[in-house]
Amino acid sequence: MNIFSSMLKPTRESLSNKNSKEEAFFSLSGKYQRLIESLASVRAASGAAYVPPPEHMPLELRDEFMMQGRAEIIDWYLNNKPDPKSLASLVMYRKPLIAQTRKDIAQRKYKSYGATNDHLRSALTYYPIKNRFVLIVGSAYPQYECFCLNAGARPVTVEYNVRFSDSDDLTFFSPAQFDALGVKGEGAIAISSYEHDGLGRYGDPVDPTGDLKSMRKLQSQLEPGSLAYISVPIGRDTVVWNAHRIYGRHRLPMLFDQWEVVSCFGDSHQLLEVKNGMLVVDPEKWDSHFAPSRSRPEWVFVLRAR
Image (cartoon, rainbow, N blue to C red; front, side, top):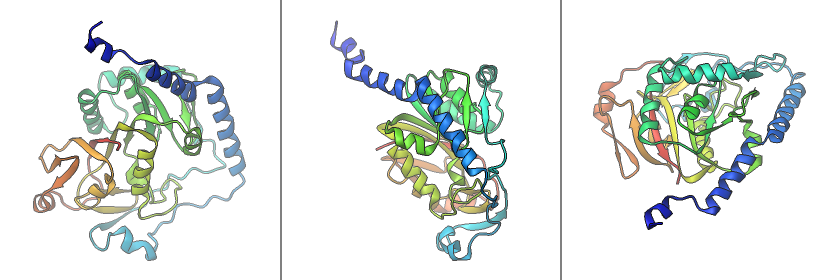
C-alpha cells in the first residue's frame, strides 16, 4: 500500500466516530423516545391560551431592529405560530413522499425556492457533502432532507414542530433534544430560515439579534471545519415586520461574523467579493443596484465553521 492510498483510507478512530454518530442520530430507540417526548410536549402545551405574534414592532426595540437607522422597516404581518390545540404542527414524511421528492429534485422540479435550490445544487456540486451527517435547520417539507440523500449525505433534521417518518433515512430532533444529545453535525443546510429568527412570526421570542444568535448557535453545533449552506434574502437592509429580514451590506457581514465565508452562489452581478474568509462589499455599487422591496431573491452562501 502506498502512502496516498493509506492517507485516503478511513482510520479506525474516524470509523468509530462515524459509528457512534450513526447510533446517536439514527438509532430506532432514540427516534421513538424523541417522538414520545415531542408528543408529550404538544399535549402539555395544548391547554395554553393561544397568543398570536405581535402585529407591531415594539417601540422600545425599534432603534435596535433598525440598527440605528441603517435598516428600513416595511410592514408585512404574517402569523405562522402553531396553535397548541391544533394537530397541524405534527407532520409525517412518508416513504412514498421521500421517494417522489428525491426524484423531483433530481429532475429540478422543486416545491418551493426554485432559483435558490439551483444555487444550492451548484454549491453542493463544488463543495460535496457525501458521507457527512448534515443538519437540516427547519423543515416544513422534506425537500432539503432529500437534497442531502441525493448527495450521499445523512440528513439530521432540527425542527421546533413535530416531524416523524417511516423512512430509516430520516431522523428528527427538537432544538432542545439536539442540544441534550451533545453530538455535533458535520455540515448544515438552512434555506430561508435565519431571516425569520427574532421576529415572532413563528412564535419565537421577539429579539433584534435573534438571527445573529441563531447563527452563532449553529456554529457551536458543528464540528470545526464543517460547511454550512445558508440562504437569506439579499438587498437593502430591511426589516419586513414580521415576515423576514432582507440582508444588505450592513447586516450580512454581521450574520456571518465568526464564520469563514467560502463562496457565494446567486450573485450574478458580482456585487460581493470573498477575501480571506470575509465578505467585501462596494457600498455605492450595492446601494445603486438594489431598490427598497419587501421581498428579494435568496443567495446561497457556503460557510466554514471555525
